Amino acid sequence: MADVLSKEQRAKCMSMVKSKNTKPEIQVRCFLFAHGFRFRLHRKDLPGKPDIVLPKYKIAIFVNGCFWHGHNCRYAKLPATNTEFWQEKIKGNVVRDTKNISELQRMGWRIYIIWQCELKPKLIETTLENLLRDIDNAKNYHS
Image 1 (cartoon, one colour):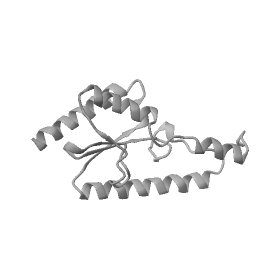
Image 2 (cartoon, one colour):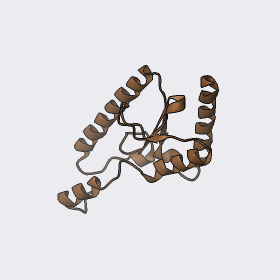
Image 3 (cartoon, one colour):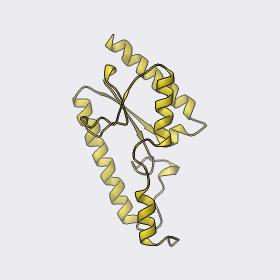
Image 4 (cartoon, one colour):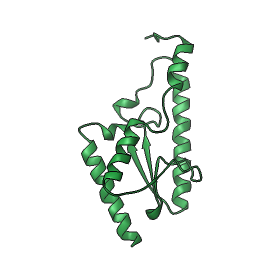
């Protein structure tokens, strides 16, 4: 199926997709704040600039969009046009993510990846409760 937008219109549309302060990211931040956690955002001194950082517990949280980071779910469907470009783009993102995560782990950080699809209404409660449990386990580990 051909794209209904021109190449220029599609480029403009895609360039407007936010990389910071997305709705899923804000959902996670509000949950953590409501549970008493204080955090830093997008620390430039850490590999991959994690979306949320709990420095006290050395926890880095990435809230990833399923499409952009190549998640294997129904929200990561490739466009019908310019497919080769998008495959390479997403493959590059996955390689970069893997490198950044490995580097953070070598530095002693615990990594949590929350996928956009895990914050949909049917899964959000379970996802955030699991995150809270894991952070509590990390808290006990650092005590």
